[in-house]
Image 1 (cartoon, rainbow, N blue to C red):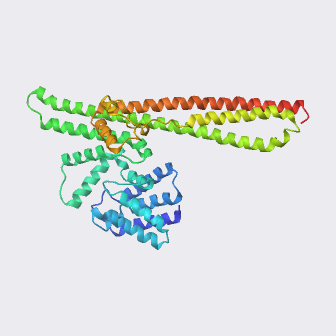
Image 2 (cartoon, rainbow, N blue to C red; image 1 turned 60 degrees about the horizontal axis):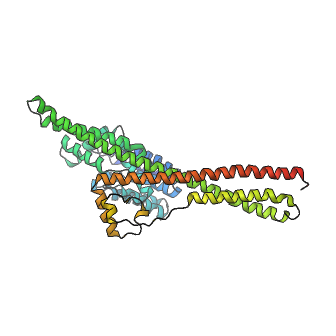
Length: 402
């Protein structure tokens, strides 16, 4: 990334905020822009982005809210993309990078609609505060800004309900942002729900002590149910992610074994094949070496070889809640209409849904168990076979004149 260009952009954005002061923008300020840029860098550093993608994300972070200074709030993304295009064109930046900057800026328009990883990173950086400890302070600033722009006050109840709705529907797009912020966002939502339940309880209170206590108890029960649901979803998501990562690690280790032993076989065959006739004593250690490498490759391939399933399920499977519609191997031969019916039935039945997720995790674990057993056998064959082959070669070189 061209650091000189980024410094010029920072100076340009700072100048725009200085020359176009807007007292109403207490949230969408230069400080917010700087914060989004730093968060975008943090998220981008976690992923293997190309230099052009990384640069586009950072540049878009600087321009994503500057449109508030020169256009209507509803059009600030377009104005920001326009300003970015003019500045980057003037500085001789490639059209492909300019296009990606425009796309990143426009993706932040609510509701956010990112289409690739750079856009997802900027969107997550822009709403990173939803899972932050300073969520309450930042939403106060945003409320103050909107009241100044609209010229009317927003009631506490209305603002709280809007934030609850946003936190319920919002999802971070990148795995890294979810890992960092999901818990904090759930805590912020919980506090808002508790506040809402408390306010509703106060509004419904009556002189009778028992009646006065009932609404908050109901609110607490509802919040407890919500927390239970979120906990279950987090558990399933975390477990599935861990299983997939372990599977990727196993496949990577198996591929290493395949590559290394393929190279070793090629080297041994090319180097020793013409020496075996003149030195028959080398036949045994060479055979041990080749057999070890060949067995290692075979078991490594077995560890990564996919299983093929029939790819269908019946209506009886749906009725008995036996079908796992979350795994492609159970539906890839089905018609779209039949699959949609099965998915709708699963989404309308939480027991069916959680049962499918449980089965999915279980069978992922079964596959992982098989992978790691074969992988352990692969490494054992390679380790002991390689040691035996090397010792055989040493014995031949010590005992015979080779």
